[in-house]
Image (cartoon, rainbow, N blue to C red; front, side, top):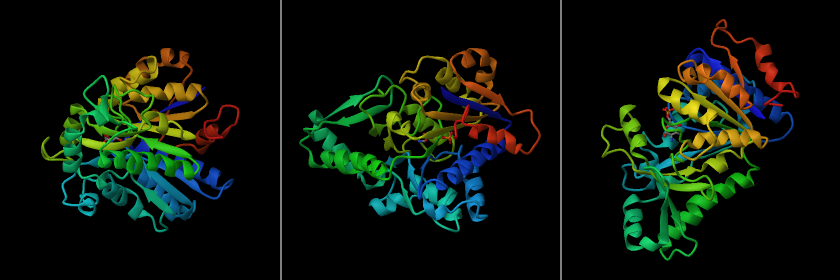
Length: 342
Ligand code: GLP
């Protein structure tokens, strides 16, 4: 089972460790094939990693024009009278990616994709849901729901979302050969992307989502939107099972807010009430999961380290080490006998 937990001192250390591992995987992979497919996440957590990646690319460590990327999710319902205006809204995930990574690269990625949530007109979506109530079901045991559009939906608009926004994105990932490494963050209740807590794993590969109140709360608390009313209520997102098809998943988390969720995700049986817990199943089935956590996020994990190790995870506490990471520590991951990155 390849489930590696690395504990870093703080945000900067987490970003450096994760950034170096990511760049190493890009270099190793590009030595073997022509194109690297990188999965990306938004949120505050990965911003330091993105700076590290851009710096490495700009220093010529790898050829960023051989990388193409896919993001996890995008809001539906951002302010703006048309798709272009919504995509340019400073809180859109497309805008975020340009600001935090794409614009920093001297040699641009070959192609970037962010789920096409801004193409959806929220007013039209709500009207179609109201007039075609039997075209979809809401799936989920908690406040966040997947709006699952039926194969036989009669609404042309809902069918278009199902086929051209959701299924087409999954198809595009498949056509690119799948994702080599996906960077993911985690929400307070354990969501990844916008696969909200309580939405079943199975049958939800690409999602149209009605967001959980906790997600909306955090978007306001973190300063992304001034009020709950201004915060989007819908999104499109890769679902957990699709995310965990990447060859490597790199899960990042910092801060105390994530500690309890991470403990549940790593210690309890995988269950969709904490979507990120699917990572255990992924690792058991041969996936490579690397969790890079700062000490605050890892508090629960550290307090229960033996129990988590008994579930097959390997924990390396790097938080007490000197400022710069020893390269041999990173090489450890390349050792095919115990490797995640090999
Ligand atoms: C949003 C995003 C997630 C992200 C989460 C946590 O919900 N859709 O992909 O992981 O926020 O954000 P942060 O990294 O700012 O804590």
